[in-house]
Amino acid sequence: MISRPLPPAPPLRKLPIGGSPPPPPPPGTPPFPPAVFATAVPPAPPPPGAVPPNPPVLPAPAPP
Image (cartoon, rainbow, N blue to C red; front, side):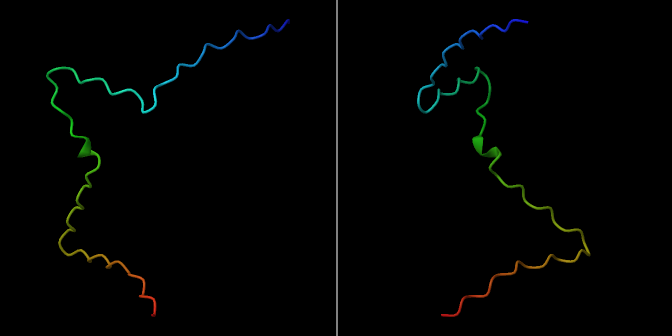
């Protein structure tokens, strides 16, 4: 079997620094708030009779 050299790779497209702006949303779609994924879900209240969790242990202050 005769191995042939690979064809030259196509040139890479250089993207502008900063990337391209996102495409505009199609008309009629409500704006999506980007902070939806950044909001923390509040913890569920403990069931009645549950033992309260231990308070966070703070490190002892360093002596002066």
